[in-house]
Length: 298
Image (cartoon, rainbow, N blue to C red; front, side, top):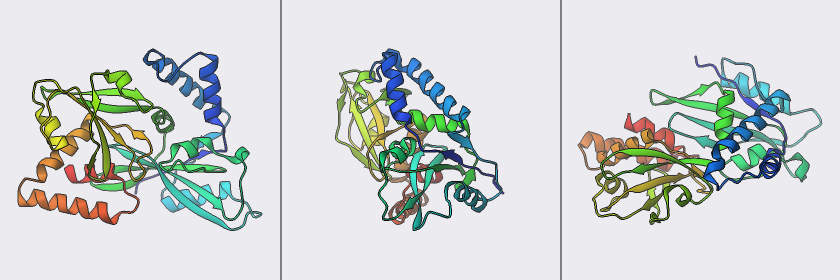
């Protein structure tokens, strides 16, 4: 039986604190030369939160029910009424997904002092979340989702992904390169020769592609985009369901997508795999396409 835990995130103003740190150190997100220093400052800030127990990892439990029960005991009290539990997707990649669990007190207006900035800015809805919250982790294992242990490194990855995102450059020789960018403008990293293309919907995700339109044909980019592509193509992905922010992808993810696209015109057995994938995407109201893409490509 897989063991699991949660990460308790107490009410915080972590984004305001980070903004002040960057201003004091004259650091700018859009300046590539500042990236390493900014990540160092983020790690330092998170370490201070762990040191003060404003962010903390729980004990390890044998069941998800025990984990959630412990969390509820830590964030609720007898004076609170009309509480409703809620869960939102926070982040996912080719290996795991992270959800934020929180309690809402219905019909009561909260003030900004109770805002949990880490959780509010980190969820895919960008929904304001108040009070203490928990992050739980699920990993992809042999085509199933299993509860997993949240590590300090996971919290760091989630936090950094709010600012820095990984995309994949598809070269004309069939090679790939992972490139990290920040904000909403990958051109700062890939260069102004790349022009944004029409967005692409694939397997429950919105792909944002940029092409430098050189003379040489790009076979893999053409397969991915479903049209004849010449020159290099940079691929980024928006978060599922809301498309409100960029998320990180890697070469493994692109290879899995290309494999599934080949299934669409493959053998009857391969076409059946795509049909099953489409059914799951249609039936799942809280889609985690990263899991489904991995599930059906391996």
